[in-house]
Image (cartoon, rainbow, N blue to C red; front, side):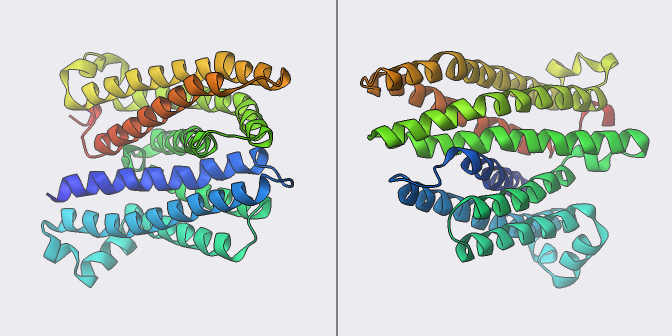
Length: 309
């Protein structure tokens, strides 16, 4: 029962950190700084980020306890103070968990202390980036030794940061699209966010592809390609790649079809509800696929890669 708990808590940490970072980044340039929309949007944005920070802090703390229990062989042994201190002081994984929880709590404090707006979003984005980067120490990159280990860890950090930009933005888009933006200001805010994310999203996908290739090359190896369908790790990785391709397809449809259609409807001062429906469905599905990918990543972290066999 301990290992499934470790995987579930990893997933919650991935989700919390990526929403804290990625949603904050989107709010910096997408939310209005003045006008009728400002109060409602910023209040909702702060609630989302505070919730993500609290989730991350709790999941990181419980995850540290679960990891200690897994290493000690039982929950009773893992929850002993000396065991927890040994994991925190003697393992990079433990140190990263403390950094992650501290960054999350500091972000929550700043979000509650500062007036909702760009300064608060910037602080949350920076602290969210610290928490997201620390996720790499839960993966295989932190265990790879030598010069290739440094490359692997750096690639893992970039992979996590790029994923956070994408998945965090998707969650923020859900808040902009659900409920349906009724007034013209709300629709303009939604369109501006979608249009502004286009280039950022493309850069994130490019970084994910490059870093993913590096990681797969190290963990699978060019001479073990058959492991993609003959090992549990390979089959989960293959499923992750399929879901990633599906996400890219939906993102492309949003960028080149749904977002321009919304822009045309706004320019013509026409009803945009018919345009928003397929956009809303697409973003919901893309977000669900993103969460599924994070679940697979959390699971993969508990499995030995083919190069370790």
